[in-house]
Length: 119
Image (cartoon, rainbow, N blue to C red; front, side, top):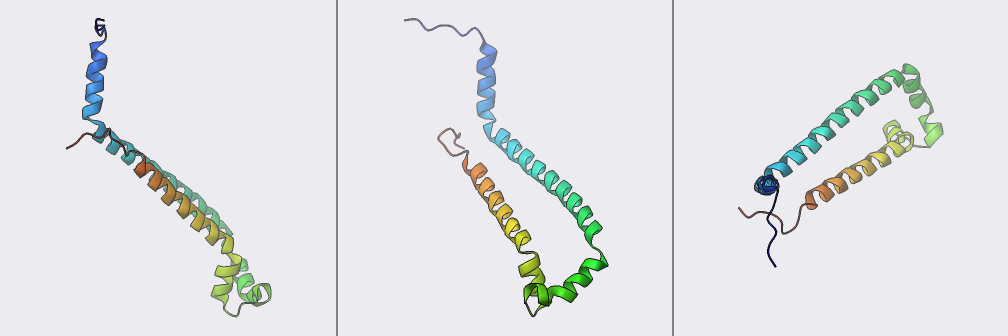
């Protein structure tokens, strides 16, 4: 059997170029992902900060300070606010942190294999 001659030599050149620069492409991919996460974080932070400033009224402060003992039964106002009023916020923050760490481990471990070029 004779080997068929490649009619698209530019494709072989492109494939060789990609193999030579796979490390650079990987760095660009991770840099883009990191930049996208930072932009999304900043945008969400500004959005939620604006909303929380709109909700921060003296009424809420006075309500928490006057009713924490009857609402929660806690003797300390800081503990009452943190552990009772904001418990779901804390749980969801921990969940988001877990999801972020899991995503980073998944992305960092997704390039393992024998296709790396040896330096």
